[in-house]
Image (cartoon, rainbow, N blue to C red):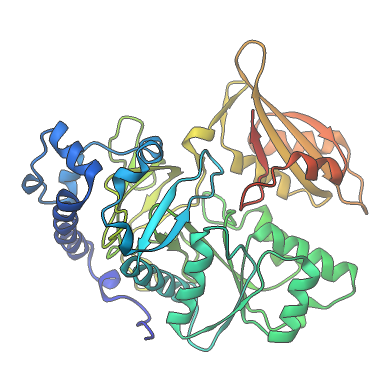
Length: 430
């Protein structure tokens, strides 16, 4: 079945969207009371009468749930018997222990719908060919979601996986994909491969890329250094997307590139400050979600740890849903360095601006007096030299501080980088 191009609810006025979500919320609360050991206990402890929750605003009567709680009491969030579980996924574990997410057949269908409308939001259509340059195994929800969502949309997939630039290019030549799904920093490596081998990548079939895992936008939505490095050499349309395994839903840009669109039929979104207060449009806080229509492990007021802002003015694409900004960081990865608050993505963006850097890894640790220290290990591009002072100047201008630098070989970076994670890590906390 091929889904419609824009779900009807996303084009309705905000008042209708909120009313629709209030009805879906009642269904979710009733389901949790009947089937969730964790939320049944939470309602009892806090003496919450779910019949008193009549609107989205009433959600504030319910305590939030943290990632730590979800980790520790993982099994208590399961709402179905094990014989109804169709697939076991896990979180990536990049910010702590991997957590299991159990999906029923209904959840997998919901996931395919989410991805189909998300890819359509990013310009996708039936007949397109998507080359998937990412992990498709190891319990990775996103890889499976992309695959089934693209099929639901009526498009085709080339399941290459996270292979070498040479292998990716050979598949591009063979299957003529129209769109790549990839980590944007890998697209830079693909570009470097074609340049080194005198390949004119501009003549390829690729017209766009859906970028995962790393931001391609600054906080004001203009292209950041990473996307500039790609588009300076390859005029393809880049789309940003943000999701997590726990929410089982994605926020994907449309052609206007002004934030990831919310799917209100699948998720309720709050942006909260440290005290749990809902913030206004444009203010940065923690993305907190309530899943709608999830059968296996639905979540209520779940704090994701990701820091974003939302915007609610209508989008030229016709959708009236809120849009999320790029993720500026994760709450548990905030660094206080020399009196300045820094999130790792700001450092990533600054380093991506320096073409002479081939690879890097950042170490964060406490010094002898208990304050944060930052050490950046840098591997230079073999064809270029860069002075330490140039790196310092760029870091100072972009993040207002100059961390400690250590110029190393690519072998050092490879040995330093953990190999037991699905996502290639560029930051280590020790």
